[in-house]
Amino acid sequence: MNMRRHLWLICGLSVVIFIIAMLLPSVPQPVEYHDFADQRSFLGIPNFNDVISNLAFLLSGGAGLMFLWRVQKTPTQTAFYNLKESLPYWVLFLSVTLVAFGSIYYHWAPDIDRLLWDRVPIVIAIAALLSATLIERISPVIGFKALPVLVVLAMMSVLYWYWTEQQGIGNLNFYIVMQYYSILLIVWICSRFQSRYSFGNDVHQVMVLYAVAKVAEFLDRPIFAWTDGWISGHTLKHLIAAYAAYRIVQILRKRFYFDGVVL
Image 1 (tube, rainbow, N blue to C red):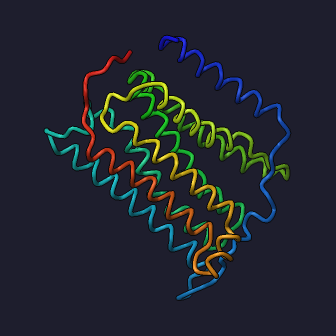
Image 2 (cartoon, rainbow, N blue to C red):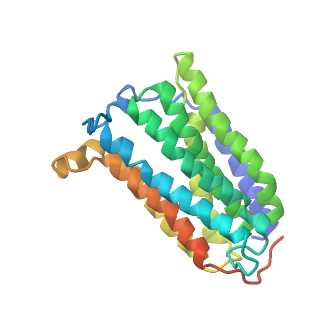
C-alpha cells in the first residue's frame, strides 16, 4: 500500500472512529473515580503522595523545554533537520509541565471541576506527539497542518466532557477517542513508516511506559495493598508517565537526521 493510500486509510478510519463515538452510549465518569487509595496527608498537604509525585512531570517537562531552548542556540544541533520541526515538541513539553500544575491542583481536592485542569494538558501533549509522528514519518506539511487541528480537538474533547458533566449526563466518549485512539495511531504509524531520524523505534518504549502507567492507575488500590501502603497505583502512574515523557527528551538528545523519502 503506497503512502497516499495509507493517508486516506488514516483519515477514513479517524472519521469512522469519531462517528462511532457519537453513536455509542455515553460513557460517564465513574462516581468513585476521585476516591483514591492513598489519601494520607503530610506537612499540611492533603493526598501528599498523589500531589507531590506530580513534580516528576515538572522535571520532565522542564528538561524538555530546556533542551529545546539549547537546540535553538546551537547551530550544530542534530535533533532536528529543520528547527521548525521542534514546534510540536514545544507544545508537548509545555503541556507536560502544565500537567504538573493541573494535576497538583486536582489532587489537592479531587472533584470534577478540578479534573478539567488535569486532563486538558494531558490530551494536548498526546496530540502534539501525534503531530510530531506525522511530521517525522509521513509528511512535514501534513504534520504541521495537523498540529493546530489536533490541539483544538484535544481541548474540545475535554471541554465537551466537562460540559456534559454540568448537564448531568457525563460523556467521556470523545476524550477516550482523543487519548487512546491517538496513542494507537502513533503506534500504528511508527510500525508502518520509518522515521527520518535515528533511534526512531525507541518511541515504542515511550508507548509501553505509558501503557504500564495506565495499568498502574487501574490497579490503584491493589498496588497500595501489595506494597503495604508504601505506594499507590495512582502515585506510581504519575512517576511512570513522567518518565515516559523524559524518555522522549533522551531520544531527542541522541538522535540525528538521515536522508529519507518523505512527501
